[in-house]
Length: 136
Image (tube, rainbow, N blue to C red; front, top):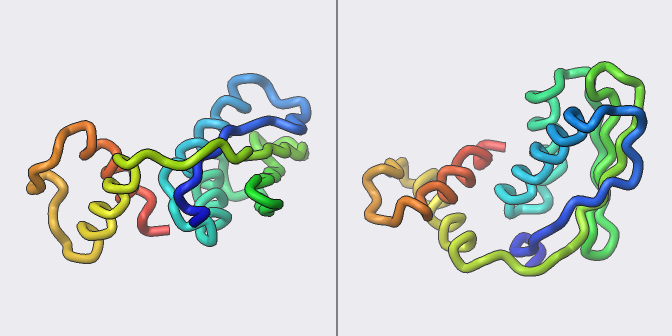
């Protein structure tokens, strides 16, 4: 099941963007990869998060080739520059991530509060990350 996989980001083409901007792009992509389990929704999630961060002049494109994901972003910081990043397959997610994802789905479907659940604080942080991106 592809949704259980972890990825490492590798820049292929960064244009003339400064390191701070590239770090912000990487942070958005890493967060999205960690929190979206359904890779069919990943392109929509990436687009939404990039637009939230950099504005609506940004265009994104996502393609899967084998187990790797190619992400193209254009128009960050109003530059007419393409960024190409490969999310390389690294391995399978942890049991805590899988459990947190299931809890997040249950909370979303049953309208139960995260604070009411008797689960460890470390797991609550992971669950909160999945809840944050669940409405994509």
